[in-house]
Image 1 (cartoon, rainbow, N blue to C red):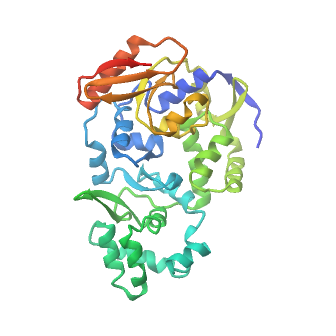
Image 2: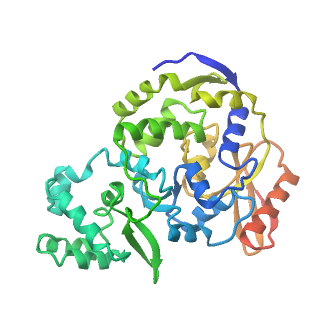
Image 3: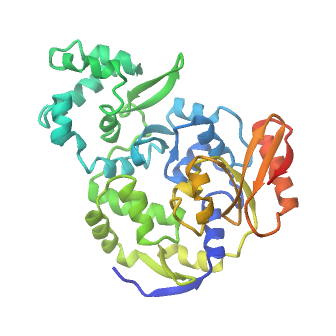
Length: 371
């Protein structure tokens, strides 16, 4: 699909507008649930990083609020992008899970051979899982004990003894269950349809366009390659499907020229984008923050090529105007900043952000610059 560019902007403008959408400049006052919903997904491989990603986007916050949001169901946790667990919104999460389910992994011959569950047997297995979780959350071993009492699933006991990591993934993709609060240090799973905020898994051709517009409203202006990275590579939605959905949105998208790159935004956002002014805001972000994960670490406008390896390895990031310019880490009461950019360090702004991070972490941090 080709759309002629309706406006020309700079990358500084684009990143400033995106920073506002990310609740980074200005920092937002939204709830934990609203931050997750705005970002679409928050990686939860390390819950301390996930919580910091959310708290960094809130003017006031307290430790433990993300866990509380999971416990009360205002956020959910499920396997989503790139096979990893993410925090999602119960209102919008089904959109992404619909795309993740599109590959129907449980029907692959290798899957059927390994788990000895045919596609025709899969619906009954899903129903058995939901029944086992009807009385409340269970740990994975407990869920395995309940299921393998049934003759049809006794052969799965070794799978559950090993954690059943792969087997349970499509159960979250299809909305049968999600992860609940941990119990005694072990993760639990729970029925998702018992969450009153859960809106279910929409039809795939309804979910696709919805996911595209949601991405553009938070991560735009974005190229089609960005969309394929996030929704195709990330969720296995399929290139042909994505191209068809994008074509169907032709009247809702506007192309903008960003210093020679054609990128797209939702039509209703183009005026605000054009009016955006470059930002020099300094932000200390946790590793694997959505600011870099959403567009992908190959996006040199956010992550210069020489810094990509650090971002990929989960370094905590210093951004200026949305561009990765350094890293930070805490050593006791010191905040050690490694500056990697050729521009002068914005000393005053970095001191202000250090003070803000100190408040979030509840530590009186002293900045120390390292080469």
